[in-house]
Length: 116
Image 1 (cartoon, helix red, strand yellow):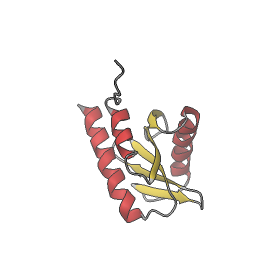
Image 2: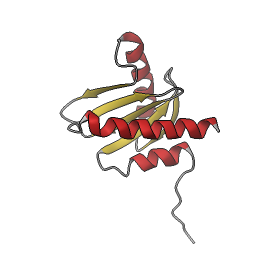
Image 3: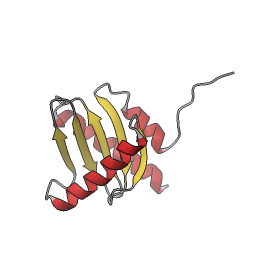
Image 4: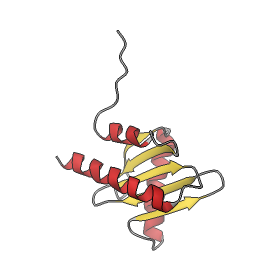
């Protein structure tokens, strides 16, 4: 018997994000850029996103909680929590007001899950 099971923990929460059709991939990192988990993103790409976002935040003074880089092909959106960073890949035309609260909620849930 073959069953379709979801991952547990952090991976499961990242998969929950993919239920929103505008989210194409998700990555969780430590604040210093170490990859914790990813979903729908190649491992090499996830590690590159983790390291690049950490380096960018060190180099530029940005909103410490949220920032985005957008092109005509898509967007990289980053939200920082207390202990982790959530990076999502989305369609380019999604407004911040729509995606940011969703990202913050998922990141808080993940951080709480890890603390337990």
